[in-house]
Amino acid sequence: MSAANEIKNEIERRRTFAIISHPDAGKTTLTEKFLLYGGAINTAGSVKGKATAKHAVSDWMEIEKQRGISVTSSVLQFSYDGFCVNILDTPGHEDFSEDTYRTLMAADCAVMVIDGAKGVEPQTRKLFKVCTLRHIPIFTFINKMDRDALDTFSLLEDIENNLGIATCPRNWPIGSGKDFRGIYDRTEKKIVVYEGTEKGTKEGEEIHIALDDAEQTAKYIGEDALAQLTGEIDLLDGAGASYDLEEVRAGLLTPVFFGSALQNFGVEIFLRSFLSMATPPVGRMSGETMVDPAEHGFTAFVFKIQANMNKAHRDRVAFMRICSGRFDADKEVKHIQSGRTLRLSQPQQLMADERKILTTAYAGDIMGVFDPGIFSIGDTVCAPGDDVRYEGIPTFAPEHFARVRQVDTMKRKQFVKGITQIAQEGAIQIFQEMQSGMEEIIVGVVGVLQFDVLKFRLESEYGVEIRMDQLPYEHIRWVEKSPVPVEDLVGTSDMKRVKDMKDRPLLIFVHEWSAQMTIDRNEGLVLSEFQRN
Ligand code: G4P
Image 1 (tube, rainbow, N blue to C red):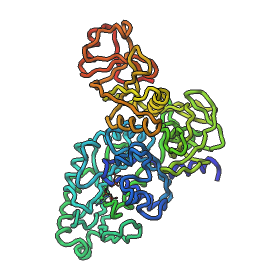
Image 2: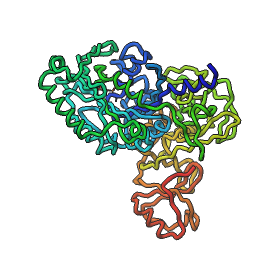
Image 3: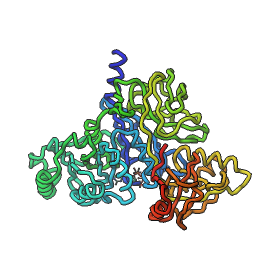
Image 4: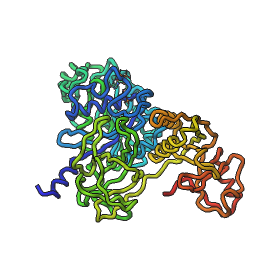
């Protein structure tokens, strides 16, 4: 096979998706079952053992284990039915929605897991909104049907109303909880019977019965369930949105599937279906030009940076999504932002603590590379002669602020190093008082849990204990243009003047209306809600 054909074939079979959910909806269990079908693990439970109930293979940091919240995102790769699948895990808590956003930048589609008993949960609405911002296809799996679930029509309505995306059920549950009898496959017009497949296996034989085989159907699911199902299907066929692959791919319609990840029911049907609906990597814009994944040479962008992932190696890893071509470990690449040509060091695929050194990878794949401190989130790398520059990843405006000091003054150096590195990862933003140096640091975060992560990481990774005083500010504005030095602006009583890491001046306010008041009081003042890089 020619090199061009090989690249084309490899890219064509790649599917790269992010998996999002409210904590406890069953994301880990579902991921584990995917890996089981992909042959990446042999027995269920190796991702999430009973003894260590609250952390999975994909959780790296101690804090996640303690809190049961996925703070960082991990990547897993497996093969299934000829596809090469990359799953990107995302934090399940809205306080980390910025991290979720960056991860979604690296995914071509998303799988959304919902607990059938709970529907769309309030704190995850924000995460799902972030997902719809990207207009990528979203596939929904309604989980835990082996437990009593909400009415199916209400669940769909909930998704439509809360997330603003049309739904199209591809299968339909027959009862739930102890009355759960299986699902009706709308494409095949067949019933797949739930026989409580053996936990943790993929062998559970599926029994398929055509709906019009009344005798068999009644035998397996009972007369009552059959009557209810027929009624619901009629209603659905009459009123529900019709299936339209174009709309799915545009992120306007989400195909919905039902099942139980724990009982291993409906998972493979879901996997098979969404892989066939999802697209292989699509082109990305570099300025006005669309970079074709298969035709163009190697390009990638950094969507995440993380320090100290593994305590055994004190390191910093830049996560890259390959957008086009093939990556060869022994070839040099160009880092567009610095103009430097370099060899990416220790390129690897990461599976939690396990790392596999890569020699080649293709568009759609995610790799981690050792970062000597040159990469920033959003940076592009490409072949040395190329000049592709992907659009940067926007930063979310922080909504919570705190003044941070180290307790032990002797630990200043470690404190500054730690806080600066964590800020470079994009987990927090740091600001200083206009006139002061690094002794007074103001930290801004999108979600308050990030304060806890900061405190924990400074202590565990840098040995620095900190004191944190939360400040009342909630609104941030960068000063784009000022008629006078920022110190001389006529402000409001709830305003504070600070500067960011690049010495750019900005104002933080307790009340949003004060920003407008300040503009009114200073003719020629231009404020921006966004940070421009
Ligand atoms: P998450 O990653 O989204 O946070 O959820 P996770 O998979 O950890 O699942 C959360 C809990 O829900 C786990 O129970 C898990 O066993 C259970 N669960 C997941 N899928 C299903 C399902 O389809 N049906 C039922 N009945 N339960 C499900 P746990 O008690 O917290 O942990 P464990 O002791 O069972 O491991």
